[in-house]
Image 1: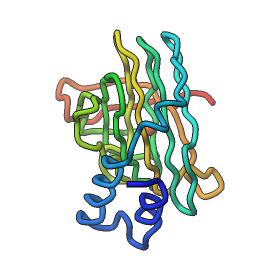
Image 2: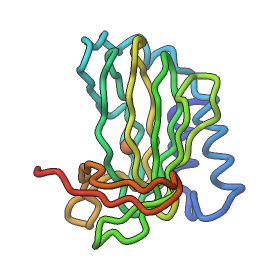
Image 3: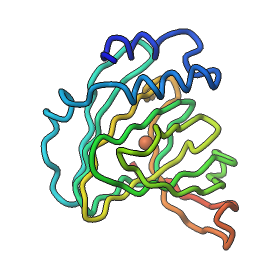
Image 4: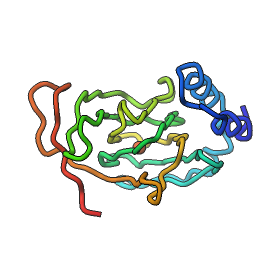
Length: 182
Ligand SMILES: [Fe+2]
């Protein structure tokens, strides 16, 4: 799978509108040769992370992120976006939530997962697991994010960061978030 072929799939009409299309994109991302991308990833110091675009298409973007050990990407959202995540190297812990009420900053359905290269491609959707946070421990982590579409503040797709203010005893229950200052 080449970047050009992945791009063709990603920008096809209705690329994420149904399960078969989503599965095809996940398979294409999993089949992409990571060698040339990994060769350009510099090591990240503990507590540091960086991300940059690998390829931009009209309506989609592939980015790579590198996290050092003991690093956290705070809870953030992906408004109206699909994001396909493939881990290339290392390990990170993921916690994700669904929005219940974005105005009132209420989230629910907390799920936890391990980001490892063997794991299936992780899918972030507008209505499911749209918020997530990542944390590495002793190992660094490198992963790819395929965004459909990418963040665009002018189109109402800005990235916001949140803290958990209150979480009930039920891990799937409603969680009150507070937006971090920009
Ligand atoms: Fe994210």
